[in-house]
Amino acid sequence: MDELLTKENLELRELVRGIANQHVRPVAAELDRTGEYPWDVIKALQQNGLMGVWIPKEYGGKGMGILNLCLTVEELSKACGGVGVAYAVNALGSFPILLGGTEEQKKKYLPQIAEGKKLIAFCLSEKSAGSDAGSMKARSEFRDGMWVLNGSKKWTTNGNAATIYSVFTTSNPDRGSRGITAFIVEKGTPGFTIGKREDLMGIRCVPVHETHFEECHVPPEDMLGGQEGRGFMHAMMTLDWARPGVAAQALGLAQGALDLAVAYTKERVQFGQSIASNQAIQFMLADMATQVEAARQLVYAAARAIDSGAKSVSKIASMAKVFATDTAMRVTTDAVQLFGGYGYCRDYPIEKYMRDAKITQIYEGTNQIQRMVIGRALIKESSSK
Ligand code: CAA
Image (cartoon, rainbow, N blue to C red):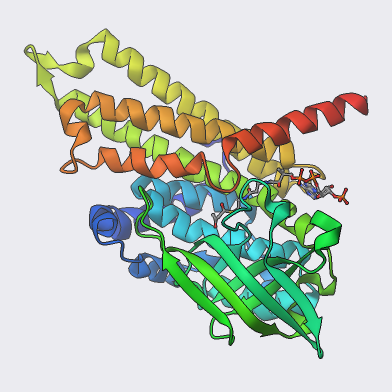
């Protein structure tokens, strides 16, 4: 339904599609095999001014909003899910600054990200604080005019590729989620180290690391928003804005797998005819395409809600995330099925889509957590009617 997109949306999509075809598709399998970071792709995106699509113009970005961010992520992910997240995680990492940072923090950090000079990561989860993000243990204490960070973070996507990190800590464990305070920490700050790299099932070109803080001194001006205890709220607001991006990654993967499945079933001949001539296969493709289109409309609706300035976007963002990522898992699994034995084999590109899709149901809040967010919102809305 291109008719629902603006000229600006379509031009951006065309630009990203060209970059994906030229710089991502030819190397996707190799990046998956080697685990190398897609620096050439980042460079191409940077040269085309795309590292700051979502960053407002006053901070050096394109000011094109979340729908355009989603279109960019979708196109990249259609070619490679790993590249899609390597790009999208810069939005996740920079949203805390955009949504909760002081004017000075926005002016200092956002232009560097928009220019593509620096990549940013998001450090929220810990070994024992995943879904229950508020139970984090990483500690921040104010001592002799500096904040001192101690503790470790898990699942830092873009880990060693990033140079700026949005880091969430507890500065007052007695206050639970109201005691959480976030900081902007730069690579090279003494006491901050990048730890073990995870060996992942999919999105293998993106380094996901543990990050460690040991007596890491951060100046007060790098406390996010300049106020203690507001970190959890900023993390939740960030996730509301970022979840449509994960949904767009899933959407791109689903569309990419569907495109490959249609092409393959037309080519593959069995019993003297293409397997696409069989109604059983056409029905599978029809269901896949219908689910992908439904996911697309929900993802774009969530992105448009954010762009419109809507006050509460948690429910629609979670709905988009659940629906698009569950769709991606179903569609990529069916696509593997349509490739038969070849689908299970790394000589063909399709199994990578299924591996890349799985993480989208898990990160930035498991789909069980998304359903919890949706359920809580429904109950809250019904009591205010
Ligand atoms: N916007 C603003 N504030 C919010 C909010 C939102 N969307 N959601 C909650 N809050 C506020 C609440 O109003 C409340 O404030 P008060 O204390 O002032 O009343 C406070 O936050 C606590 O809210 P809850 O009681 O609802 O919090 P909870 O502990 O029950 O947790 C949760 C809620 C939704 C389960 C949340 O913990 C959550 O989203 N968990 C999943 C975390 C997650 O997504 N992690 C992924 C990290 S990123 C990643 O995967 C790695 C990567 O790099 C890609």
